[in-house]
Image (cartoon, rainbow, N blue to C red):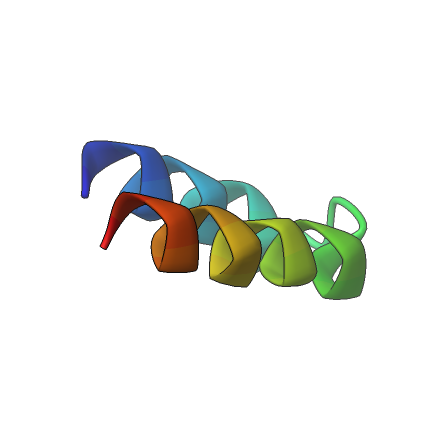
Length: 32
């Protein structure tokens, strides 16, 4: 969960939002 929140923050900065968002979804699936 904290990991996803961190990715959300990076995504908000426009730091390669689409890619990071994609990674977040993948990790979220694995973790959950």
